[in-house]
Length: 161
Image (tube, rainbow, N blue to C red; front, side):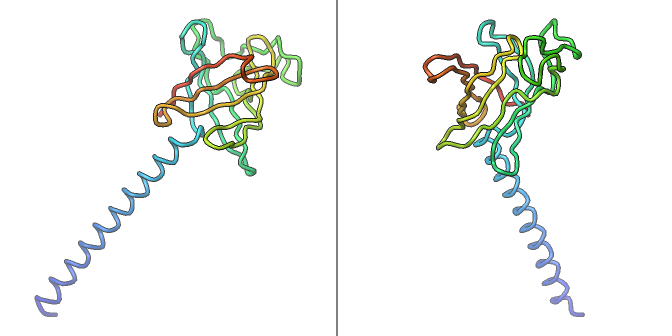
């Protein structure tokens, strides 16, 4: 094999390695961008009354594209892992809050998600829910309401990495 052929192969191999690295970096960037334009991921809930972190909620998407969210960790100072939803009136009554699905049936509606429900485990009430992203996808504004969205309250949750 001539020295010129060996050199050409080395250059081709180096070019292929650079192209592969560029592809991986591009795919990572696209994945990171995709994660910031959807609520899918882990969120730290913030109490709208005290401003203190309350829990970590994992939001996932099912096969039909609907979002749901479950509590994966309590963050309150008095939070106990075996704490139960004693005020719940549905099938979640007296069930552990840890692992409980508190957001269900959220559907994409333009730049927001709507038509779902959210449970407040503190009072056991289920509210209509809508949510949208802010701050480049790092904050999720979650609104629970009765009847119309004007009659409700909002919390801003913070994306966790």
